[in-house]
Image 1: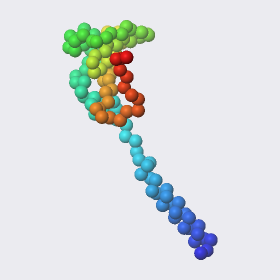
Image 2 (image 1 turned 60 degrees about the vertical axis):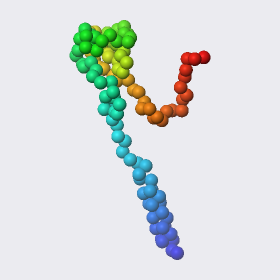
Image 3 (image 1 turned 60 degrees about the horizontal axis):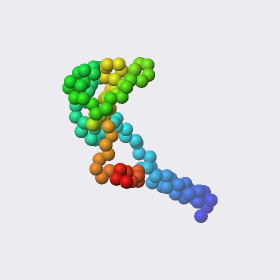
Image 4 (image 1 turned 135 degrees about the vertical axis):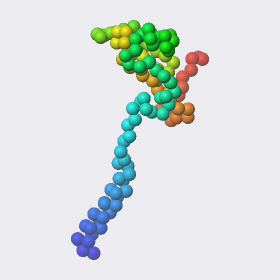
Length: 116
């Protein structure tokens, strides 16, 4: 076999090897948290622009209230499935808490218990 033919065979081998690895170069799909499966489980959440009085009237008392910090003052109210952030008296954003699906893969960490 000539040197030129050997080079062509090597080139074809590399091309096949690289071609076989192309599926590993797939596009990444990024889905905003609010659109991920399970995020609708929180149901209706306070909307931007609502005031604290309206939020409590419509959604009830929060589980916890965190005092305002910073300038402008940012405070938060924690509900079961989401946290509401306020600037002063006005809702900035409601953030749904992440809850892994039942049976979802974990990072290998074992759950902790408080039973001693």
